[in-house]
Amino acid sequence: MDIKRVAIDAVNETIVMNVVHMDYKGQVAKRINEKLPLAQVKGFRKGQVPKDLVEKQYGKAIKQEEIKKVVDLALERYIQSERLNLLGTPLPKVNENFDWDAEELTFEYEIGLVPNFEIDLEAKNDIVKYIVTADDKLIDGQVERIQKQFGKANPVEKVTADSDITGTFVNEENGIENKTTFSLSVFKDKKTADSFIGKEVGDVVTVNTKGLFEDDHQLMDYLKVPHDNVHNLAVDVAFTIETINVSEPAELNQELFDKLFGEGKVASLEDLKVKIKEDAEAQFAQQADQKLLMDVQDFLIENTKFDLPAEFLKKWLQTVGEKKLSAEEAEVEYARSEKGLRFQLIEGKAMAQSNIQITFEDLKAFASNAIRQQMAQFGQTNPTAEEVEGIVARVLSNQEEVKRLSEQVVAAKLLDLFKEKANPTTKEVTYDEFIAASYGE
Image 1 (spheres, rainbow, N blue to C red):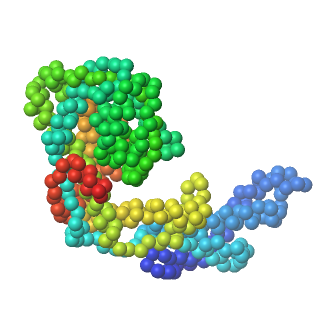
Image 2: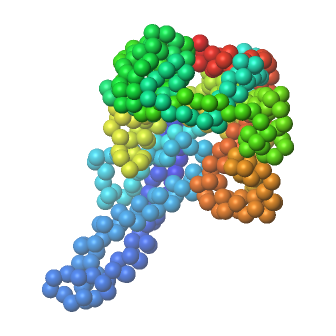
């Protein structure tokens, strides 16, 4: 068998395979002999059918099966021996006039190659690493929410200015249906707040989303409107009142502190504010890291130029998956996934370039830390090493969990690499300023 590659461009090639009779005749003959005692042809007893009749009835199908096995195995070994780094899998070229009886059979496969490129993690950039602080406004607001959450809710018949109202916002046409609780101070316009005054359980109040809140992003919280839709959304939503309460704020005492944070860990309002600040800024740091990672990804995708075998991948997308895609559907799918594919290649290059590897010990340490954090959220602040190790062992026995954790470990290692190499500018901001920067507003 003769196999060669024909280059089309840097990322597209064709593998050409010439198969001759000697490549498959032995296996075809073996299969025919195996078929002899099993063949059934009208007029002959089973096992007594002449060989030429067996060959006539079954030979063509057997020949094609064996040739396909030979070609598939040779293609796999060739790709391995040539160390080809492929995108997708080889696509056979269709030949409507293919002659299975020819002395020499030619098979052609289109392949898409991973492009060769370099990345510069230290290239000049305007990436910002945000340090998000919890200001007094945020801390005081959280103290109020704690007092309200753990205070006594006294049901009342009618809405007053200091009521907490629970109910459901609905607009079927725009897919809005969300149950929530709010106080009237949440609304930007006093007229809107006043429209609730005096209403009772079961009443429906209709409001318009345009200018409903001081910040349009609050539509995401109270109505679960997607971020892309919050700006300039101007539709009527019906709110059905389900409960009306007036909260009696909880007293900030040791009983409440112990309930929230464990015995003796917080002893005063000042301690509470310090704890709120620490917890909030730890959460903000995770969000800031995620934004940094996304900003670096966008920068590298924009500034690392390489060609992809786009047309090949679009054809390949039509052949994979349970549901075969049309050419138009594959075009849409490729456009949707191209950015992710580019960063996947950049990510692999960055890891290889910096010799980043993921070990089993990395997975165990990451899983252990995640499990301890989860247990702490449910009040188990001091689990034994044996308890944690037992849970880690169960988690790592699940292949889907291992895959998910591996992706998280890679992201964490890349984040550390980007912080070091990309040298982002550090900027301290409040949470409101961070949100504005995150959404480009």
